[in-house]
Length: 220
Ligand SMILES: NC(=O)CC[C@H](N)C(=O)O
View 1 (tube, rainbow, N blue to C red):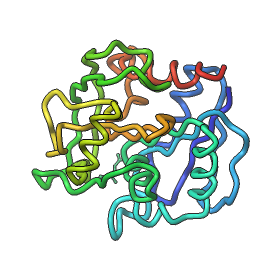
View 2 (cartoon, rainbow, N blue to C red):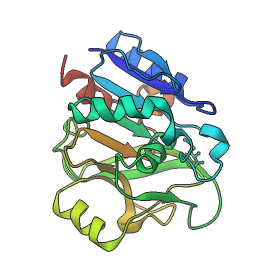
View 3 (cartoon, protein in one colour):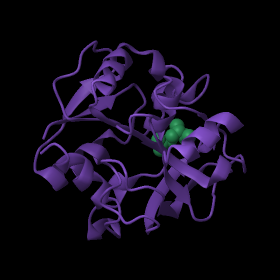
View 4 (cartoon, protein in one colour):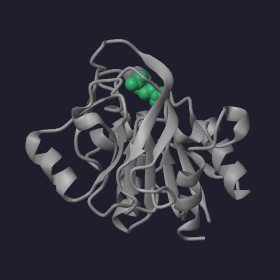
């Protein structure tokens, strides 16, 4: 099982992601720089959290136009799993690999706390380690986590069972309490909460672990 963590100028959660994946699999992911045009052959590509390009223009907007995104789109098209967490979710939306946008939190404040998420579908390689309807804990840390779509897109996401997680108590104003969504082919997951920060008891819990175990064992 090989994985890659993509780093942009301003990413700041890449070490947490690398450490989480290494702890869970025993294998250290490769880190890939945003200016690269190609990716090594991997089974999972992760875009971690952070403040790529200082969140200028819109969070993720500049990173979404970087050379590495072309390689990620090609690999995703081939069916390789792609996980975007927080700024990674923002980048995937800005790149058009996931529908919708992440706007400023409804309360206009940066939110850094632990929230509860409901697992809405187990039909993906990221969520199949949970039970449908299971409530898990996860930290969030974002200023632009307010997920929005038009009505038609929202209806499609619901109709195609592509809402991966909903907030139990919506912290940021996201439409329909959405915390994470899947792509049409279900191999791309974008989510605002940080499962990589809850993978061992020392973190205060392990609710994030099944996501990585499932995603990483899918092709092991
Ligand atoms: N932790 C993060 O990835 C932060 C995401 C983003 N730049 C925001 O504040 O909205």
